[in-house]
Length: 190
Image 1 (spheres, rainbow, N blue to C red):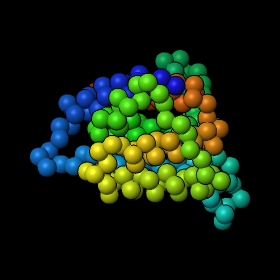
Image 2: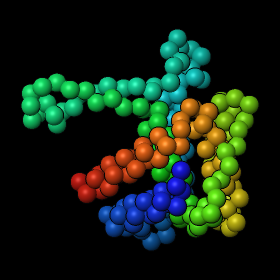
Image 3: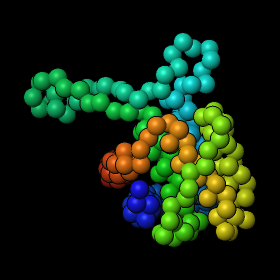
């Protein structure tokens, strides 16, 4: 995984968003990014489904088919697009993690080496630990000048990705695909 390339792509997206949605005076955009990451983590665990003891359907949502409307509109022939909602939510989280890293200047830390994934005993613990470290990052966002909490968020998040069964090649590919979609959304007034 080429993190420096991903941090750069995220920086370009962040700048695009800043042009379309400038910061307001006194706005704590870092706090908003951290909250957005928590929301995306909730969406990720919801697609994972393994905590839903009340449901017979606890299988992760890794395959979704939807109609390719654009193709149908042009040809009147039905086609389907396959997606992986679990991977898509993981990549949404990654966008905010990279954006937070850019905001607190942690992007340069990873130029020479990548963070090493950290693991808990099971995936439920992993989700909770990532969430806890994100919360800690929020409360100490103005004190974490060395990025120690950010490092822990990133490392446990990487471990979570591996526990979910993602390869770094597919994460990187999905990241850049979603990054392009996010740029398109900014262009279309999202």
